[in-house]
Amino acid sequence: MRTKRTLLLVLMAAFFVGQGFLHHSAIFPRWRKDYSANQGSLGTAGLNPDQLLFALIGLREFVAGILWVRADSFFDTGNYDAILPIIRLVTWLDPKQIDVYATGMWHIGYNFTDEDQRSDRRYIPSALALGKEGARQNPHTYEMFFETGWMWYHKIDDDYDRAVEWFLKAHERPDMLPARKNLLSNAYQRAGEVDKAAELYFDLHKAAVKRVQNEPEVFGHLQNLETLENNLDTMLVRMVQRGYVAKNRNDGSFETGAYDVNPPFDVGFSAKVTVVEPRVIQIEGTWNVLPVGTRVRAVLRDADYETDKAAALHWDKTSSVNLDPPRDKTFMQEQLFVKNRRFNRTIDMSKDPTMYPFTSKDYVLEFYYNPRSAPPHIQDKFGWSGEGMTDKNFLNTEVRPGQRVVYTKMSLTREQLLRQGEWNPIDGKVPILRTKNYVEAGQSAQDDLIIVPQLRGAGQ
Image (tube, rainbow, N blue to C red; front, side, top):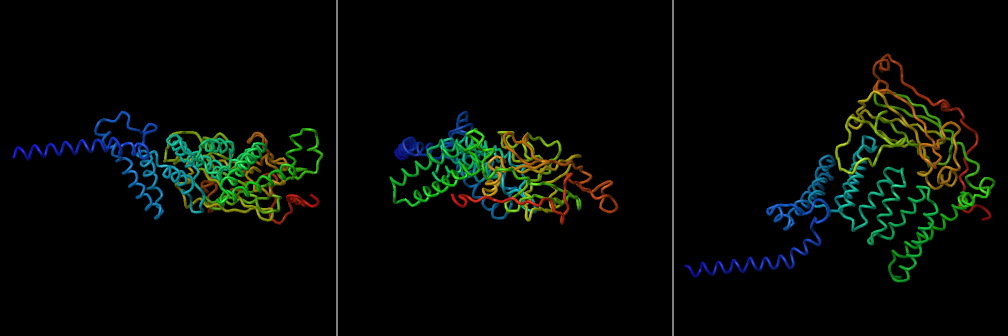
């Protein structure tokens, strides 16, 4: 009996020694390299021995993977609220899960909408904070830097210098995909840094030529090169035709030259707002630009909502991820689509009281148009920064320094928006607000039309 017990102890000792050697020489180095959460504040430093044991066998990463699989079922059923805590828990358990950070940013920034698919922009600061955390936890790859830049560029669609800032950080990473590098040039243009956009295109074109020479059999390299050549050619033509080159020469030729942006065109903006029912507003107005492509931004928000910019919020106000937006605040943003030089949009907020609580006493309705967000065929007349655009009533050069934008605002009260008190729907007055120059439908605002220039016009 003693001999068997001794043999068993020897075998157990040999097993533990072998397991320890295997763990130390193979399992743990592989886990530490590919799976450990060993960067940032979520690593193993400061854990007690029991916690360290669980961490070393990758339990956190295992649990995180199971939770993320569970989140997929919530995506399929549209139960978006249930996904938020899972996203936060997974990124806490395994901060190396880049896909979770990226998907979480997209989910928070895009998926919470009202009945008419307007995004709840109160969530955007949380989406940006999640992107910044993902970039801090994964500085070795470009992905979260790019995703954060994309949120500024596409979803916020303003403050393009912030998109440039994050795209530049993505460019610093060696794994940045060549095709995605092209987007930085677009961001430079929207930020008004046209020279830098052209310089980047030249640099990217040079690198693309080298890739094609080294690997001519890779079709993607040739495709990217052709895209760059087309973009660069188009941009150089536009720099001349829009008068950008002449303006930078500062020799007076811009003011007297027959450039596409001369003379500035009066867009003739006007607006009328009617609260037709509680939480339902109708916005009508004029925009004297005939070609399709204009979308005027309308923002309805609490008058005391914390913001550092007109027609926007303080998007980047925090670095902590708070997945619960301010429930007592209202921020509605809509794009007013112009057709035949007019817009007419009914905005129904009655079906989404959580998104539009209307708890404050006073509200502001802002109208904002920035040519930097316009499609290229409109920019061919208006220029990158509004050089070819004016408005005798609402041109503004202060709310966006260095740019010519259209901006005005109106004041509304909670009683007006909810049709209460003297504004009740039964026998009260109908709340109607107008800009001083509003022109009713059927009346002519202006007779002249904008002529959209063509690239390389006749004779060029």
